Image 1 (cartoon, rainbow, N blue to C red):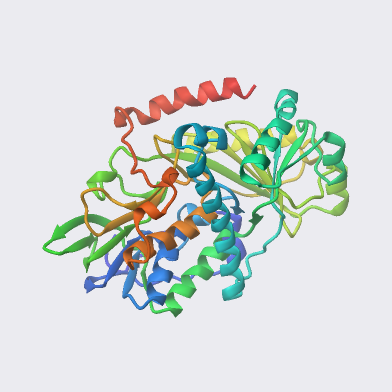
Image 2: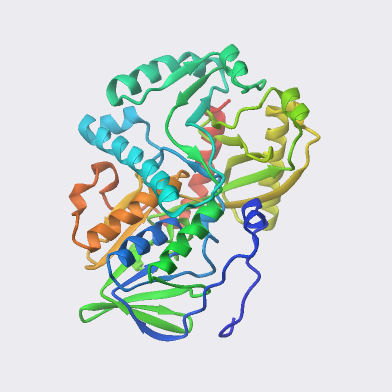
Length: 439
């Protein structure tokens, strides 16, 4: 690709179609100097850049393609609890009850951060849903919901409630594979591309500079600053933020090598449905929902009566593998919502979910790289976590907080995966095992 050349980077998502023409920031050509260089123009990077720019720092955001091209513009739009694949009970066993409570409070703060931001900037992001519903795909999962809810309410005061099948049906949540529900009354749904584009505009308005089509190729320390090298130039900065998440370049910096595992998540969106079609299936609720599988499905009815349906489980990002994953997702959709078997899919796409070996996100300084900070690995639920974690990294740079001010759950740097070159192979084995456990 030559200077100024633009590749076709459309991913065919409903989110792209819903926002129309996406602003293309100019490419970085030549050398530039800023206080802070942020790598990645997704929710994390833009959140950090906004906080820094509003505090008076000169900040640039370097994006390999364009704003929202990665996970921030591909996800299901669930602004909810997230950042780890550990249950609350597992967090208590591993980190202690106090640290688990601190992390639960962090997640609640993250959701509120997004809500406050939407109000502050008047962002129109198609917000809906009051909390999230977890639906038992087996009777034995439903049987354990009450104990789970009692624990969450007693330990963390979350206000969780349990619903039987009849209660779910009364709330417009009906399907042959749903044997009960557990409602978490925190969070909401949104259009993630509208959110990330509005966030980018807030950064521009605050004086931050965004460079699109500016892939970062290297990061090197030179005296008391860092040089971020790009295809057609570079940036010198005293502070750097790594915010690429599952789209990070594996060896930029070298410390990242072998510490992250991007896996696939596939999303489809139907055409708008009539009220009669919704009634035929018995699903009329706009509640964010997911089933109780380890390799979960996540879904919601959107404001225009389209239905979003997402799946986990892909590994290889080849055209054939993607077609297979989307075909499997469509088959799951028709099995779970049989009355909609003839409702067409209008948009289908995929994105990276970023996993870490310890199954928790990391927010903080990068070891042995003074002045470099990172926030990533949200394990499939990054809208809220990325929004707050980007701000927290900015606060560290500004000297407002220290790393140990954050919950212990997310303040331990990533461990390396054993035999990193074999990550995809043993992930395949894990998926077979999880598929067996989900039966």
